[in-house]
Length: 431
Image (tube, rainbow, N blue to C red; front, side, top):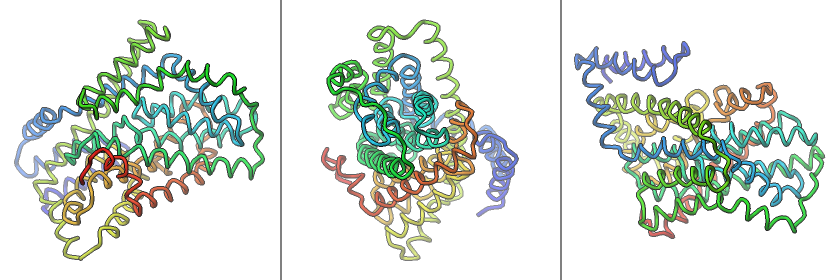
């Protein structure tokens, strides 16, 4: 490890430690390295342009963000919620189950945990607290926990980023996320059922079964989006990037023409908000591309791989060790930074140890999503605190049981790769 790289790391940790946004900290630390190495800041521009021009798949990120914001802005979220209430609201812990099922369904449209929590999650929290059956901290906690499913079930912005750094098929990554996403939903609903019985939460009035077909028909066009997305990719009709464009266009047609719930002014605000969100992600991606160039120049990934192979470590021990590290990093770093900067360090080791990159990628992304609700950073906790004004301490106390079951679900995915790889293999994946 060179002196220049030590200076880069020192600058990165110092800048992040004083509260500078991580994207700016990465960029400035990279400039420190390039200047100290005598390479000139112009190298950063070349690396950035080369990385962006060779990464057509990155166009999917702003398109998925637009689709999510359109879904949040119209009455689509309300229709989906009424469908979920009719489907699972009759059981013990009903609105908690509605919360999880709504996240499962909405995740097939947004690809973003923050969009899920700030949009449909805010509505469900209000429903749960108004019913008087749940404390506000519990409503916020299960909303944050269920929002972690958003980027696991396709479409998924983190999976697009992982595909960028690993050259893994985004189609198989999307398929690999379906099983784990459903599994996470099941364990969260089981924990909600157990807590509801233990605390004696009252059950909501059941929606008559006779109304369920009407609610299903009302929500059916919105429910079609994941099917259209996956058919486009696996039917050979579209590339993943084109599928993202189709998803955004379908959401627009649905909200503006079919449901007539989107005005021109609202659409303008959606585009502005989407541009801001895309720019924030883009800054992290840009910084990561430059930092990854520096890491590659220092030959860090190959050094890590050779050391691990020299230790004769088993693939399972490696996976568990990396996931423990990612869980710890998730307490202080956001998911995009971990995926773009930290995970590439371990990819050569995965190849050397024969670890499937689709399995590793999905497990790592699940890990990053758990980090979104892990104190002290836990960005989803702050998002829900910001949109609901529920004290952070109340949310953290209530989120811990859900955090435990999600970590156990993650362990199951590590030990049983079939949870991730069943559907990809069914569709011809040979990894």
